[in-house]
Every structure is written in C-alpha cells, then in structure tokens.
Image 1: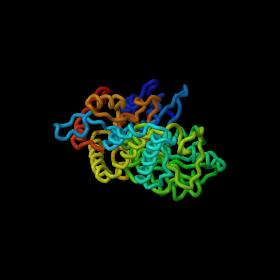
Image 2: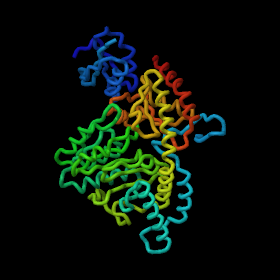
Image 3: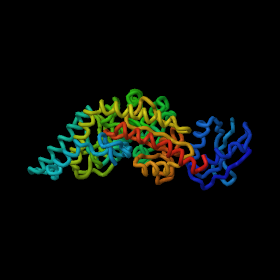
Image 4: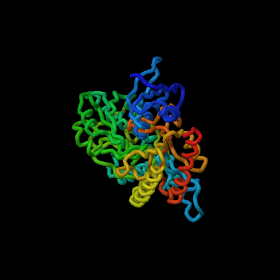
Length: 77
Length: 381
C-alpha cells in the first residue's frame, strides 16, 4: 500500500514511535495515509491502540523495503 | 514506606504493588516465628522432633483445605506458585499424554503457564476480549479439538484483574481437564467450580514467599512430570518448608476471615482510582470495571514512558508495577495488554495491600496527573 508520508522510527523505543505519529499526523490531509516504520515490538500493539483512542483509522501492517515492520494509519480528522 | 498511617498525619507514600507481593500478614508473622522453633525437623522421620514437624505440616494442609473448601489430601505445598503451576499443568497433561500433547490456554495466562505449555506440550492459545476475558466459544471449540491433553484458564488476570468464567468454561470441556492458575485470586475470592487442578502462591495473599499451593482434585489423574522424590506427598519434591507452610496457612485463614470487609474497601478504592485515572486526558483504564479482583487496576498513559512513570512515582514514594516494554528485561510489552489490544506504553498497575488507606490513595491520585503531564511535556506532548 502506498503511504503519503513515511516516518522512519527505526531504533526508537516506545513510546517514541507513537509520539512521532502524533506529531506528524497533520503532515497528511484527512483521508491520506501515514506510515510508521518501527523496530519496536510495542508499536504493533500501541499504534492500533492509539488509532482507537484518537479516532483515527488503523489500516494494517506491511513491510518497508528492508523488511522492517511498517504500520499504516489513515488520518480521519 | 508507611502503610496504614492513620493518626500520624497525612501519608505521603504507599506500597501499591501487592499483586507482585503482599506484605506478610501479622497472623503469618506470629505463626512463622513460633513454627521456626517447632518445625525444623524432617517430617518423615520417626522421632519426637519429626513428629512435631509432621504435625505442623498436617495442620497447615488441613487449614489450607478448609479455607479453600477442598480435601486435605488434595493439597500439596510446593516451593513457589510457579512450581505449583508447572506441576499442576504438566502433571495433568502427562497423565493424559495418550490423548495428545496440546495445551489450550488463554492468551493472557501468567508467563508460568505459557512457559510450562511451551516446555511440556503444544501450546494452543485462545484470544481474549478488549477487557481481557477469554473468548468462551473459541476456548470451548479449541478444547474439543483432537489431541488436547489439558486446558488452562486462570481464575482472574494478574495484570488487569478481570475474572475469568472458569466454571462456565469447565462445564463445556467434556473429558478435557481444566487447570486453573488461581495465584491472583486465591484467598481473596472463593475458588470457582469445575477445575481439576489449581495453583496458588502464598506471598500473593500475605503469606511468606517460597510457598506455593497445588490442588489436585480427588479422582483426577496426575503423573509427575519431573524427577520424583521420596517425600510425604508424592506430588511435592524437596524438603518441606514447614514453618513457611504453616505461616502461609495462618495468613490464608486470616485473609479469608477478613475478605468481605477488605474486599469491599479495596473495591471502592480501586473504583476511585479508575475514575480519577480516566479523568486524565488520553489515559486508558483497562480490565473489567466490575467483574474483577478487588485490589488491582491497570491503566496506560499515551505518550508516556512506562519506566519514567514508575521511577517518578517511586521518587514520590509510590511503588507500582508496569507492563510496559521498557520496564521488562525482554523489552517486550506485556503479553496480557498486547492480547487485549490496549496501549502498552505508559502502563502502571496499582494494587492495594490489605491496609492501604483512603489517604494513601488520595495522595497517589494527587500526584499522578502532574507526573503524567510533566513527562508528556518533556517529549513535547
């Protein structure tokens, strides 16, 4: 899936990937997708949880070109 | 730490981690000291000192049986709650090995269950709801598949407090025996119906550490999964810690006698913490709000580092646990929170002791919002 913005959070530990996501959400327009590339095991749980708490849409997980997990979020508001 | 500080001014600190270990109950302390002088000998021997030790051990077993409403010959003292879990789960599985090696278990079981299942069988985890309750239909379906040796379901969750529907699940398992990890609730809540074997841990109810309780119901087949020993009880191994077992029994007796009053008080205090924590912006209070253990609550704070939160609370005198990855040696987040799909960072578990006061809870709640706001400000949130 194409992301309009991709955040490189490799090497960051929780809660930094979620903080980066929150800081950069408005880099994309509502309806667009922002991706978080993260090596942090907690991101797999925390990014969907953040979406639920902040009323954004968690689209799913795929992989960056180097195989690092990538979490996709659609900005709703 | 100054628990129970009424009359000595407003408390400014509290140990709020009883779910990791409850302070020794006063009833256990007295019994422990007396039993140290009486219970040193090997209870298997045939001399007077041995008979004294044996008497104390039998007494401890009888008291525990009465408190838990089981038979004395269903009670085994082990060297820890973890040891009781291993022996209970794997011993029932081994006795059923001709049926298969699969161990069906809830995804939010204690790590002692998960490690035992991985070590001694083929683990088949079953998911939970957002509140941490087992998905009943999926659990029953998994248990009715082929080659299932044993099913494992905790009485209540040790991290979020949610009580599991053990009796309801057990009624649908057919011939598959249910092992119940009751470490989080033993003494605090009556045991549910329907289990074949169960485990408890004395230091979780105010007994000394180093004493676990394994229960195997009469008629349930159990085979030792570990090297055998030549003790009084075929399910145990190693020299019995007689004074500690008796102290554990004394604590259990006291806790059961006090629990109506203590549980009601703790339940209301936890309600107060749940409400106050939920008032802080972007804080998620997790676990079942009603059908839960009386003494513990878990919540997670968005954008907050769990380790920093625990450290900051400790600096103010409040000792709490955390399921956040940064506080774990493995750097993995709590598998319980992950299975529930709730936020794992900025997590704290608050668990009350039997004498935690309203003033201590108020003091904790007075500092919490400022600490959360301060830690968020440090990261620009």
